[in-house]
Image (tube, rainbow, N blue to C red; front, side, top):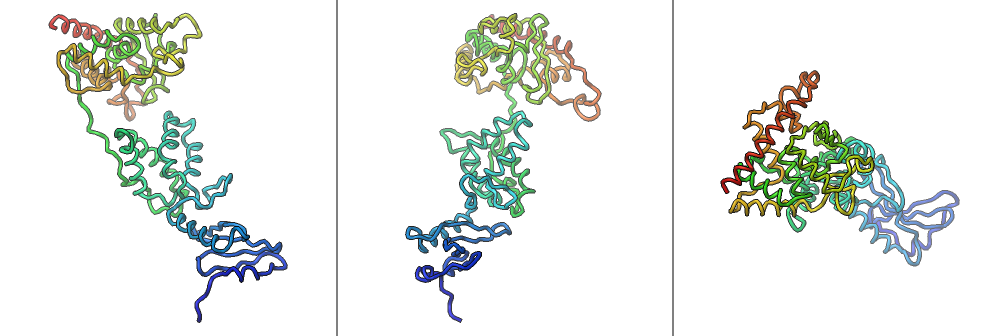
Length: 420
């Protein structure tokens, strides 16, 4: 039997339309390329390719003087390469493809995932969606979802971690976590995907747990530096030292969370890292710092319009927290080293929280109380059956602990001044 030949321009010119319906003529040069002729006489090139167990029909264009057989073959070759690479080739402009077609792109599925699983359901919904838009979709959004491999995820994580002006391993770990959750959701919707692409993919491993605790001299120097800094960043650091709360919880404190006459600061659950509201009694020292910050922010505790204002608000946008915390922290740290008379080993803002926890233990505060101060969901009263029945908030115990710590902090700062 002789070798089959492909379509030719003379052959196409000689083809006559069927009386009804349509007829197709295969091209044996490019597998899957066909010429379709309808009863109207219109001749259209199509590409038929089996994809994920289903036939994918792609319209290449109408046969004309500007789009001939050679043009159709070139376009078909390019599309076949794209299909093999897993790129999006089936979606028409303006068409919203459903993943049930078996050829959904990552972008198609992400939109459904965000709507069903993230928006309005996760506290970090904004950050998750931003990570998809900034890091994930620009790299693999147009790819057919079932073609994403472990190598693709690894390359994406490497780019996020090391592709910028400075390494950002924390962001890369977050991106990997968000992408992994997405593919866990998507797996039942992707018949052809061989395995979870994030499993065993490389991503920056978290550093070993830090155990840096400031010495009394370092803590005193940091305190005096924060006093010199003043509002807003100095007061911010002072409250970190006196309350042991998290950075974001202090920065985001609103006036209506603070009951000054009762000396109580209530961090709502939606702002707490673990989702649990935390009552933070204010020691006399902490209350002094709060009142100083409120006065510097020109907030009126009796004005209902001011009640929802942030204590550490941005000067340009009152709804946002103050910016420039990194530069301010570096400035405060450098000044603290100057007070010490030498450069101390590196410590971070979060190390203050560990220092407070250690200090509470040192002055004899029971572990369960210090854990309650820090709003940690650990310990025997926070797990299992005990968590169901023990709902004591330890408010008075926390007040006594933080007042004792405030006195201790005053002594630490005073002794450093006397021995300086």
